[in-house]
Image (cartoon, rainbow, N blue to C red; front, side, top):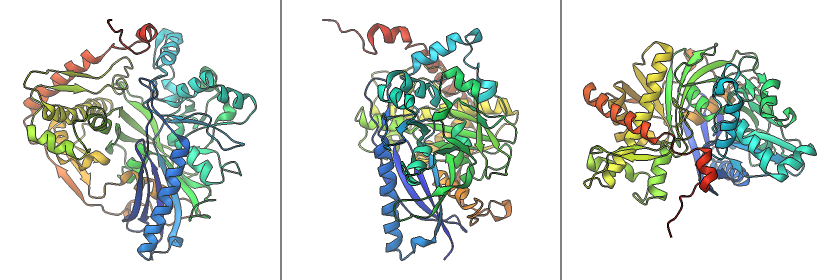
Length: 523
């Protein structure tokens, strides 16, 4: 049998373990477990680190059982890769192995006042003060401000730091540490793609930066060792895969870039998950955006390989808007229903929805924005709102694509797409219509996990997956062409931008201080 490679895909809403054929990139089998999100206060988003790692164990065990049912020997699995929700921040006790607080999820907004204070103390109150080193604006999105909040507000974290027991990591670090032994010799590491999302990592020197750590007042001894995205970090000490090397690690959006095989300068992909993330490969040199995009490390596929960089446009709320319609509003009973409901209207009937639940990310970076629905009339019903929700995802992507075209100077002619929402055919057609370019969806949708598997299988000492251009597998795809005229598309996009302006400057630290996120009630 051909060698197999496993991939742990730990996302915001679920964990999965997938097994691929290293020669053909065929997905053999997988298992998925949903993850609970906790919202203890308005704007706060947390997950339980123990639930995260337990879901990883469960997915691996169930997938191995499924392989057994197919009479496939799990000994054929030669390596495991990890891909993960980025920026989500954990601190744990290296002696007991216990988390010291819930994981603070990337979407979380509790650090808004911290961010405002940091920007106010920056020269010229410039949110891009650290961009020359990090490629990032000062924002609630990134890990450093979340870690600063934990150090300031959680006694157990403070005590563990003082006694030298605290470890910081993003989700990849927590998973790798647990799987390689935990408090019995677990490996405390991360890869360059995840490190570049912390605001503590210098994307030019490719190392943790003393000046950045000092700026956020974060002790460097808390930080994991930074490694390439493709090398043997350690060996599994648990589950049925004990002894198998963990040899690939990529933040989820970098993994999707690899899985879409965007290895050439200028190649671009857009992933539709909880959020929406467009990455464009910019080669071996970081390109600084003039239009609100992030500069990030895409990957470094081997210890002796140069890093590859990307421009990124990040949207906080994409699939999460469907979850909101289902869980908060009860408008649909399942995520799959949204396409049928929206299609029954065929239009938003002038209704525009800006789902700025966590402020606005690219290209605005405006944490004070909040969600807004404009253009309601007595005629508006839930079908129109469902359509407006799908359009919102497409309009946000259009804003990012426009920024990317301006930064690169080369207009994109087609967009590669992946992620859970791409199963929605109406969304894909809307996206092509609103962008005015073809949208190309691979028939194998699991590109994020595939990217992690490719990195793991190609690692030195594993060498079961070739990343040479001539050896890359051909993956069939489906193409959506624009079907409306550009005048209509531009009119709808202009109305959307008008709605975006009205969503801004809603919440500030002053309003938080005044009523702690709750409106006064008249009695």
